Length: 336
Image (cartoon, rainbow, N blue to C red):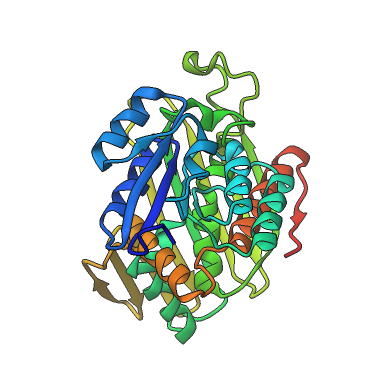
């Protein structure tokens, strides 16, 4: 705890969109103050520091290695998650890290080892886990209201991402590694089961786009994944980040079972059984705010964090298995 014994001090590492979102969530909590920020972009760092009354540190090490910092929000691109996380753990700081965990199993394992050795808390930013619709889906699965096993289907189509590093294998490694972990974690939650096998096909439809011409290691931006779970449930995800700029995004998801269908959409969940529909509306969206509050609570009560390092590692293993399947054309087993 910080020197004044009344507040937990926060350091924000990287001040882009996710850093701003973390800072905004932390700022809403009592007992918390944002004391330091760091970003290679000095203008971004200064803007966030001014907004929250924090100091701009020279680099991530200087931001973390302060006596008034107890919790570190790591909001860098995925390929840079390991170093600040390990540095923070070695100094006894708790860490809330953006997803995906990393781009390699090696980096993910290094992060988990550092946290275990230093007995600090580590949680990852799977915000949808704090939404009421996730709780409702799990309840419905537990009760067997649409039967089991089920097939969960997800379709997501978007234009080339404004953050071009997301399209680099050494950045965030495309949508399969960057955004699919949200859905893998959701499926694990509502199925209460682990992924055991992935079959995938994919391509890079935007590889010749002018705005990506300087990226030498273009990641897969378009893929269909079939994930089989130990429970017998399956998840199918078709995603692209390769549409031309200016294209309106589209998305769809449902869950089909022997007794009916579920159709989640934003804050609404439609339950279809026996030709009748029940619509649950205005379901609460916990998101970043609930995530920060839950992580602070687990620190204060010394409990295991939601969206743990193990959860993030399983999501990473599933993503990398899917990308291996794309490259080899073969199904890939997942050992968790």
